[in-house]
Length: 557
Image 1 (cartoon, rainbow, N blue to C red):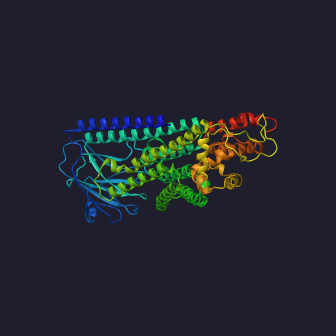
Image 2: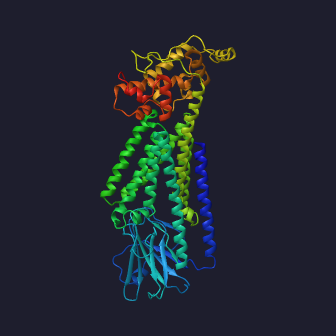
Image 3: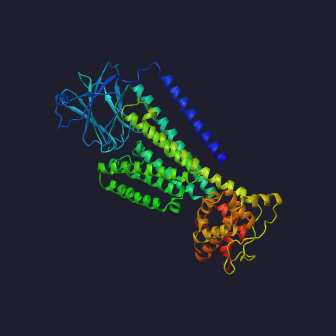
């Protein structure tokens, strides 16, 4: 696992270096060229009926602005006027709004007798002529349209968040813009694809469902980012403008559902925090209902609902992660860090959107950057968890084998009524110094009472089914130190903690195999608390004497 992290970090480093070098080359090539068109930008929010001539627009109360305008969920159209400065002689100018989720953008240019209108945006089909694979709303304006004032009027309208940042380019400038955008998204989605494939390999290698839930989350997050950034319309449904408009809420909801399911599995919320689990199930119901409604009705409230629930759910999951950390759930550290990083980038985006930070490509895409960092940190969280299990397995295998199970025959079949581990009166095989140290650790502890209490937890509450059960958790439940629990098991039961827990898990697995013969072996392994196929098979064969498959095939099983 450490090697896989090393290779993953090397891959990321290589991609970032490649991006930096290619960006630097582009900037050097761009030196000395006219790229951006000089212009003054103003906006107005008044509404009126049909526009007949420029005087109708001149009556608006125009306010000058620089940088992005973010109106949030603004139902009415917003007008923007661009007044060109000294423009060099070019055949075309390109006008772009560098986000893909604005529903409708219409250009109005006066030709002396009437307005020429051109529309593009989220609700419109894929462009067939003007750079069809560019993900953002884009217009090519011919220089031969007579316009004495040099003014371009733009009407923006969207039920989703209204982000306004018109940019005018000369042809050379737009080429560099297009290459930069393509380069950014190629690297971005290449990293996500690499993460997805890497974790699918981890899943098939370990058969651990945490990787499967994580892969589902990465897939849904990538799908949402593809649609959010305009590539859904380009590659998936070029002629379905209505579906493209509504799919953003649907796939945003799917991404949120996937991260909730991943969190439930990763933090074992369904086992450890029942009230939190039921709260998340209720939230999932609301999210799914809103997603279905978004496909039927085009309404601003479905967009607002998913934004509100998304923020609420994210804060709630961060709180759950902090609570797990406070309960000594060590692997929650990367989970908490992932949510913290995402919130930092959300904050940066909002500071940028409200004009408190200057316009920059990285700030404009801070949500995407935060998402990919969150994906990477979730990957580290899952790998960290698996590493913890592997370290436990190494420790368990280095210890002497526990006494054989009572009631297990040579063929591995169950004899009448298996018993819990018995208390032994002596510490077999330990040196005198270790025995003396163990006695000192247990000073003031009633061994028989504590072992009875431990057996009761295992038998009545089936504590062994908790895949994250460790010495610290057991010690907390018994009101002892971890070293005292270890000493109890070594001296009076004759086994290590892992061996003690695995005996209960294997007994439960054998019981389930008999009662549910058609049930998948791997699902039984996970149900009784094992975290990987290999660990389960090793423990089963060591304790029972045969493999799980052989046990299921045996005539008396």
